[in-house]
Length: 391
Image (spheres, rainbow, N blue to C red):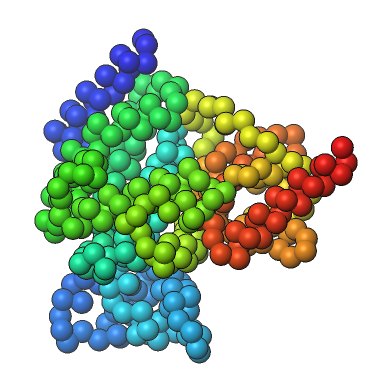
């Protein structure tokens, strides 16, 4: 059976499951529901919120971490103090992201694509929140819309993998899988919106955010369209970083800097997830664009992993070798142990392949800006000059 026929059969199976209410849609996170119920009572107390949050150790740890990363002054160590500092809305946001993250980060034949969608959702939520106020949009609604606007794609991808347990999935380039998922994600997203009883403004974003930017839309939908464009530009311009956003006149100078800082916050949030890596894949390998690269030799550290050894660097990526695989389509915080000073940056894992020494991993910087970008450019110059000296 050719790929087109196979995709047609998969689409039919997905539609039939959706109509029969058999497409697996995760429930709205229970902890978030409990917190929202408490928050609706104007007489609620921090103690009530703490009791619920404490039932989920991952949530409790994330709340304390957010409280300490978002504030200056005396560090907080207790859950109650952390809740007091960041407020109930942020706690609900954290609970929602953690609850849905299990679906977004699971391994599978299309795991890299699903993770990439969820990575973009986490970034979109924080970016939308950052840009909301000046565009007349509630920051809380912006966060929720950014987080959920493409969740239909996550569910469709998981549905394809379920079908793949009965019939072999075709080996296709990621772009072809993405186009296939896009055909169904709005339909599935609207079912999710109805099942979760999401606000009408969020359902509108799910329904219309893929329409062209010049199509009239609500302020919230227009914001999510803008945020999606921001992320696409940052993804295709790793070496340029936030400076690449100059092509968007809608983004002010100070907003570019703010988005760069917000990306680092998302990196810290993403580090709390455990992203699985696949043993089998239905995504065909695609050759990376040829780019001049220079040999380097320094240690690279990634939280919760053994050290890697950097081998080559190019203007938009670097390659490292180590014992552990990393999950493609995911953000990691890396520290480059180079001279004259280490560089800590956020990086997007592009590939992770077995090799005799363990795994060869290629990562691309994400949202470079400020002093970190200057350090990155200096490292490139140093690698280039060193190779010229050898020659």
